Image (cartoon, rainbow, N blue to C red; front, top):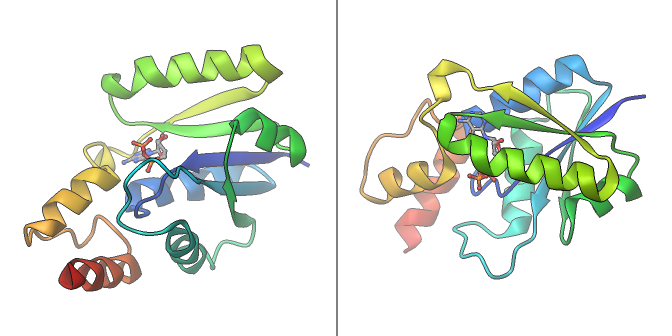
Length: 159
Ligand code: ADP
C-alpha cells in the first residue's frame, strides 16, 4: 500500500491544490492532505475551518484523507506509514525552496519528495493571492471551489 502526503497551509484550499491532490489520488492508494498547524503564521481561516473545507471539497475522492500536523513533516510521515511527499511546482520561484526542503527531508529520514508540475491553468495561483484579490472585491470564482468561495466571501464580509 502506497500512502503519500500533500502538506501545506491550505488557507484556503484552491483549485491548484485540488488539481495536485486529485492527480496524486489517481497514482497512489491513499493520499493524506496534511494541514500544517503553525501558530505563529497569521491565517484567515483556523486550522479546523481549513480541515473542514478540505473534507468538503475532497469528499468525492474515495482515497483522500485530511489530517493536521505540527512539528517535522518527516516525523508525521514516520508515524503514519507515509512513504513520500507529493508537491506541486508552479514556477522556477518554487523550485529553490522546494528542492532544499526535499533534500533535507531525505537527509533527515529518507523520505522521498515527488514533484508534479502544475496544471498551466493554475500556475499563477496561490492562497495568498486569492485572499488579496478577494479582499479588494476581485473575482476569484473558478480559482477556488464554490464552497470555498462562499466561505471566503462570508469571512471577508465579517472583517
Ligand atoms: P505555500 O507553500 O505557498 O504556503 P500552501 O501551503 O497553501 O502554499 O500549498 C501547499 C502546496 O501546494 C505547495 O507547496 C505546492 O506544492 C502546492 N500548490 C499550491 N498552489 C499550487 C498550484 N497553483 N499549482 C500546483 N501546486 C500548488
